[in-house]
Length: 589
Ligand code: ADP
Ligand code: ZN
Ligand code: MG
Image 1 (cartoon, rainbow, N blue to C red):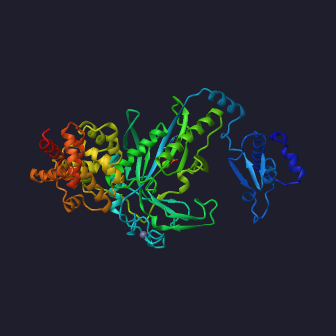
Image 2: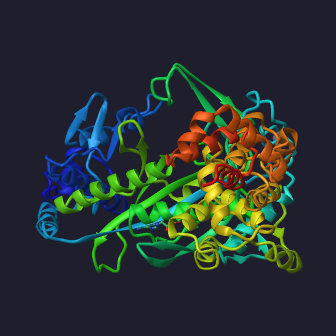
Image 3: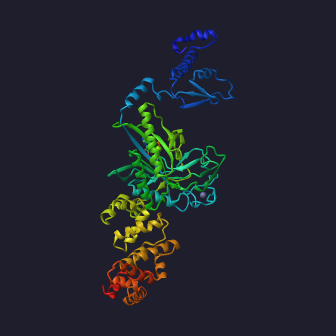
């Protein structure tokens, strides 16, 4: 009985001895037709399809408290293609899977199709403010759980948010450095959802009117300068942190505890347009973005500590197609390497599906670091699912033109500009200039030291081969750049030797003391006083008579030994050139 014409509605009415009006009959007929149509769709669904797009729990359809059990549904569900436990597996909604013919056609086309990948990123950066976004709790990392909390950031009734101006300043700085339009007026909105790390039941974010709109970031990729457009930058608060007992994630853990220290810590979310065209380019974008945020001093940019996080949206389409493919969102990537690997994995997976003609559904997937693969987490929610609405506790944010102008003057040079300067004006190699560009801490030190020192080549050598061997994170370096210039000048003038200099540097790092303080304490001024050198040379020649004679009889190699002895006697402080000359003079050679 799959054909609706098969049913004679009049027969049915007389069989049941119903008394119905003409209107009721029409309604009954229409309803029945709907049910029958649905049964037909279910029955004709291809059985080989993985029908797992949604499982329907019987309990969801048949409530135990229903006054009348729904017999129609019971009948219909008997036609469901598969039953797993108490779940009925129903096929994707019409249009999702396509017909068998369509699938075959896709697969044939897929064999020699050339695909291209399209990527857009949503980056969250934690801002370096001292206090949280809407209360004065400290943002300190590593405090005792729940010690940095108050009624506002734990969502207590009646507590009201007060916006942190410093966070707004930082967001505007980010916008200015990325050529965004700074909106004179923006709105805070509530993004509603439940999760135990979100005590208010909503996250305060910006939705329809963000603080910055548009903009772009220039990156260098495969020898070309690419402009990656931004969609927006908005301000939002972070959620708390769940700590799972006995397992790395919620799955398999015995219990989960929540720490609200991070709750309401300020973030900016930077959303790109889908302008990135490879996993490698996405990685490069993150490197440059990080360099911008760090050099602005608004974020520490540490991905491993979760300071900088990134969700990636990716789709594939046939090369030349104007329309974007269905996108998949990937979360849970905690390093640059993870971003690149996850995107490469997903590119291959999506291409394979395309080639086989398997329809791609919009969904959110998680990167599994230990398994090096992605897996589906949920079908993607849409923004309307969050029921965004303007937060009635916060006034619209209004930003004055003069303030923006003032901030504009404090924006440091952008990464690519900086790199160009290092290559062109300071004659550094490309790889050295890049090292400085991607680590603004190194570049800042370099620039500051160069303020009172004019040999960039020598400075770079000392930074790369010496300083970096002691400390690779310059946000923690205790050596003062101006002191370092003074130190290099002493070496250049011969006041201290290079070897002694390196020793002093080592002492400064192991003792965590200032470089000048160490040099003064050790009294390592090089001995250039010829009387003092002569005295040391005489002593060495007296106690090394045999070697002195050997040298005089033509064994020139012995000179090195004698110079070494004098250097040892003066604890390395004698000027080696002067020692050399004096020994030769004394031995008549
Ligand atoms: P949503 O409404 O799902 O959040 P948006 O249009 O706001 O989607 O885009 C979110 C991110 O996904 C942006 O970074 C955007 O560039 C990227 N994006 C959008 N469509 C695609 C696509 N088809 N392929 C890859 N990335 C995409
Ligand atoms: Zn608080
Ligand atoms: Mg969006």
